[in-house]
Image (tube, rainbow, N blue to C red):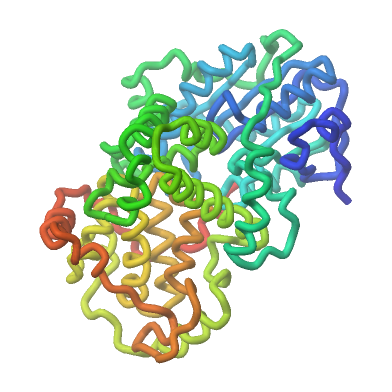
Length: 492
């Protein structure tokens, strides 16, 4: 049995964003309302924080925001750690500006803590978490809810329109658009909750890190001291934190949006894409803030509409779809017909001679694949028009379709700043089962549609761009003995 929402949240205008994760009650004798953030790393326009403030105000309690960065999350690396810490620094500063306490801990040598969420929850009235349908944020929130003796409430912060208001049973993107589009204006604007209780300054069960006071060099030192993958360096393309997100948003409305409808599919002009997905994935910026800027921009209506379709139709469709799946990261999400035809051709001759090291380092016999993979290696991001080709080529470079799925998810999750996300898992799935079955069967792919590199190679400068992109100097991350599978399900 799941408990009903607490009255202050049941009457909240954004109540459809909130769902209880357990049957426990709010503990009025708590010292604060705990707001545990794993991915929605922003202090403003954050429904998780606003829900915590609303509940805290009703109880006469302050809000305590907690962010922990552990060493043992899957694929922890300099790239991911650095990006999260930069976001965490701005989270701390902006929480302080709102009058909210934000405490943080970064695991590293000599400064390791266990069970901090449970220890902080023990003094709370309730725990509010993000409602994330993928990766560690999902199973860690569910685990805490199962063990907690007080209410744990999940709040959707990733979508403009809360998935709960859309109802169940939407089976296609066209049906999703029809239900989603009429609701967008209603959900695009929200009023920030104002704390009515002084900032929490009581005791804590640990000594927090003061990320808000740290310099770039201080953050780099935290990353260097962590027991993580140091062979995946930070992205030179994406600046972490709110500065990077706001610069990206300014670039979108000023340089990208005016020609977006005609340039977004041209991978030879990568800056024709919004490039906001890393910031959206880590919640440094939210869809409401993005759409407010788009609406105010001087750009053709067709370009605004196309961008809105990408951000709100496709991205939120993938989030909606992920909530219906037991594990969106798992191979069995692929449509049955696609698995059947791919497995029927599992014995077909594959692309000869490619090793995991070749695929990981972008040194295969396929120049276009290498150009795609080196965007992941260097930038921690890949242009959307390249992702479909990249995913389909992996099917032909690996031993069987299930191995292909594992390799694609591994590369996405380890290297990409927007990996481990409903959208990127949805994109990978589209490489395996997107569209209707083909009329004729092809080797390796069966009735799954193949894809050429023509949309890039046939551009005026396509061949030159692909050659240069495939030969960019790139890091060479360590190569595992075998591809890890379902690592998101391990840990504690």
